[in-house]
Image (tube, rainbow, N blue to C red):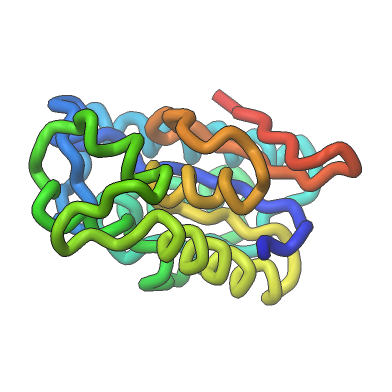
Length: 194
């Protein structure tokens, strides 16, 4: 389902709702001050990778939601400042976070694990299986453009990608920590760059 090609993944920086452990979904919550700092730090980390001469990032593809897009722009600006290269930055609506329906703005609770397992879908919520199909399709589209893309998106969306990689699903991804996703002969290897 997911093309076996390497890519970078970056979850957006922190928002006030992240700090309060509220489910955001499609609600367009902006980065808070901590999240803006995290986005700049992530960009600096990625620019170091660029300078080290490893396979450089070819493009940045972001969710259009503000928290992800602002994180993507911070990464783009840091790479430009470090290398003089301005990477193309585009958005893909299929990278938007899952719609949590009636659970948006509510605490993350005991409904979340059954939703991942496909045992319960809140009213108005996208199914986890639907999210997995959409997320893998969006990453595949970026991979088909050639090179190694940086995908900037969301936490639940990355859980869906973990499912597509046949990795343990319910693992929380830290805000704004670049993650290199490498399809080795022994399965996907995820390496965080802090």
